Length: 333
Image (tube, rainbow, N blue to C red):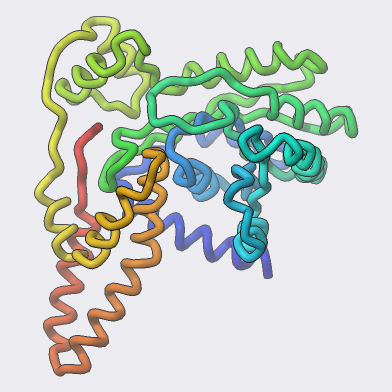
């Protein structure tokens, strides 16, 4: 039952993601291993959007570590556990709670020993800045604990990068890039060597804009319409020029029309947006509003208009609403 639920949820979420994003590009699928224990290590820029992009664009069915603060309510905790989320505690969650991480590591090791897959965001936190931050020790610890228990385990590390053209708005582009797997046994039991090798692999995939002139470089890239999801194109542009001024692209007309046809949901977002302190969570809340709200809005509108004898109006309105929802586009940011 649990597997069937996750399968259905995966299909629904994948469909919703393909509507939310204007384009999802997946590269390097040939590197995704089969019949192995897989520790997926990924950069982290967009809160809950990142894990569901990975989960819906591979057949690995990964468990993934999630900040423990979202497990506070028992019902939510049971639901998250049901969809393969495992809590990870940080210092801000209380020093005493850090001891609970051993349970998390034990669970992660168990998944790997059964030739399952774990998704870990190696940086340990999220940020909408386009660069790769230093990797934490957690993923290496899980890998080596699994190898300690079973030295013959066929375990690989799969580096994955997610690069966004626009972290905050729908109708944008996202690129998921899988790299060649790494063999952690080569570096066992040297933590630093494994972390360095994984960082090097990810650094070749993640779009990087240097901190020194970050805003100027980003403005120039957008002004010259350089694809912000392509590391090669960004690197090539920055190697030639990094100081050209330009204006940020504005939203397309299709985006305005999409909002008009989904006005109640847009109003809900305008009410909710000021309450979101962390910008990295904005896309997550937008996606959830769309995932739940769009079907509710369409059904409510159809039954309301049909009840008062305007079924033809309802069908026409919903047809246009779906057209503009699918055609929604936003520029880079």
